[in-house]
Image (cartoon, rainbow, N blue to C red):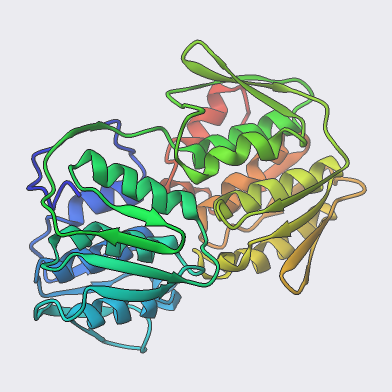
Length: 373
């Protein structure tokens, strides 16, 4: 949005996460080959941005990025008028973007149950299209709060849109520069909820975070309450304390899939049974997170069993004294299992994966008094 408004905005509290820093660097890059590394958001948003701005680019990334499907977004952009080809396997990066021939349609149908980032990418370029854009979302809509957050931020940049039922309408408009302070990340905050849940005693203060956030992962407040965490504002900070935990939890993760790993580990360790739905998108993340969870939960005696569209979490009966966890090059695997250190000795393999979203995670653990080697 800043780039489409002429890069004259004042943006504050930008994350030092690798995904954010990549986006900042690559969106203004003059290089023909753009390497997004393992940043799925960056791949999807830049695909739409480079298409609408008629830049010839080759977008590539890690081997895992080449395994993450992007055909739904590419097909939508092609329908609009973008010239995009696959350089290796159809439906997957790398992509060769060769320009935009002019808008061919003002209406698109797109699945709502795969990745909200496909939808956000199209929404953000819609004001720059000659005819604007109407998106009809087909089927179940996943991560709806993130679509609403996109619309809210677009409004800050002077662009109006409507999102009613399964229809998103964005007329042709012009982005205007603005001043914006980025909220702290609720996804990152969720790991501190897990520490609070698993520790014998806890009182944690989280700065620069609001209960009124539009972020989908703000719902961790409601999810973690039955897991034994009370969250209330204390001045300008969010205070986490212990509460009574329940014996079982049922939750639909459709709108907050990035919380699933953290909740599964917490339930397994605390002896809480879980019934989870809305986990389908976990298979196309940084790794197949369902398979990864099944492998690693087994190391502490937990199980995640799939039955149709429901996953049953069977908790551990007795935790081992120590365990070593593989991270599958996935930042959320590392941070989801790290809170077990409140109960057992934990080894995290390849801990550097946290740079993707929370580079100072291990430093913050040391500040809390955890001993690491």
